[in-house]
Length: 163
Length: 297
Image (cartoon, rainbow over all chains, first blue to last red):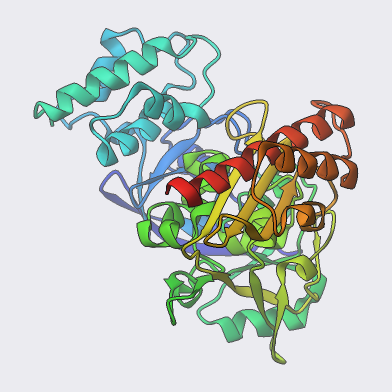
């Protein structure tokens, strides 16, 4: 079976990238090894852990469960694009910092991308809604409580007009 | 340029199609060697483990003609096979017309999976622990199937043929699913038990109850997931309810019949006895809730 190559153009965090990829290259590996955007982490590679979550046209997806070629012509957002160009943390990033919402940090990029998309749709969530939205991201350090506190705090700041 | 070679799936030929006809022609050419790629949320994990090694992947994601919800006559809801869970769970009119989906969709994996996964991919994968095959069976959904040679329709109960197996021929694709809209005096409920939110169900029950003006049952539909090789249509076990009111005693009798009718496979997380126990409890609660929803709205 020949390894076919495909030319793709993807927009990642507002920048356009062109690349030639094998069909079987996972989007997660493409981001990390081809674009050198290694902030997207890879955990289980079968869609369970959520560490590789990125936003595809604004919706959270597992980048280990897509081929890079499928992202052709689409917009991606990754952890590298969350802070402003001048380095100011997003309200959710700042809240995670303040509430100690991470320990080893391996799951954090996936959690930030998942909850960034969630807060865009619902900036006044209940604690249960936050936990439900977090259910697809495994964290083995924190016990989740501080993450939940951070998301609720960030929601309040976003409602109060934080960017 | 140095090329890193970190490849989990085996090599395959990838073809993103621009029309349904092109997809069906390719499938007719390649048969079992080819797989349709819809959401990929079951297929790609299997490929990452090399449990699945299709030679050709026909990507049908570009087919917008297969995505969307249509309600031609107000009584039937036609859902395109490449409609994503995310679109279904955000369509309030759809959830109102097919309230079993409002109960069942939140149980399907997690938000990230629901962003990609499709209804047609789910049903064609035919995982017996999955929610939607049971929902489709309970609702007597009609499956529209196409090939380059023609079209046919199957009822859900005929579509699911065995463990991870459907009645689809190698050259065929499930293109659309038709669901009857709910109506007054009809109530439904889906419930399941899983070890953690988003895990596969140890057992789940979809119940639909239709009542007359005297609150007697005129029709009861029951389908279970997680307790057999296919979704299990247990409506016959509920036949004693027809013509009766949904009293606790009558519902209890149905739950006992369901427990007798099923033959759960058992797994590392639940013995067959435990699955049978859960199936009984869920049957009782799902029928009672469906009944409550008719009577109290």
